[in-house]
Image (cartoon, rainbow, N blue to C red; front, side, top):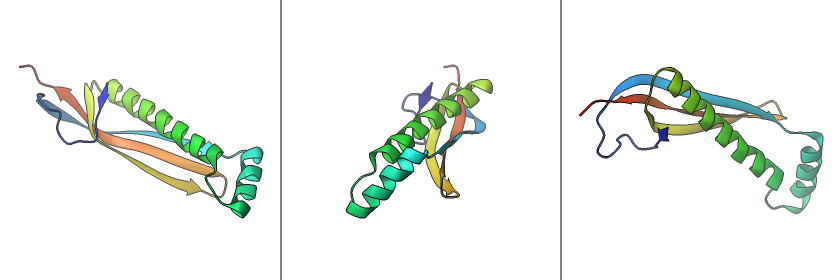
Length: 105
């Protein structure tokens, strides 16, 4: 299923079905926290956290696609991400957009 960040899909006409979401929440484990604490002292990228956020984005987009498919969508336009912390040990990532159904030519 096509997922785009643009408002329009070139060459396609479609009707709007509604908003769709895909959400995941990941927890940091003890080893990641220890590594992050050490990295905080010396500075630099915390690669385990970066990997966790990349995985979270992938999971949230796959869930967005699944939710769009459930309502009969052909594509999702205007996809965006939102993220935030839940407490000190959890990160939530949401992918959201507008599900659309292609119109027959």
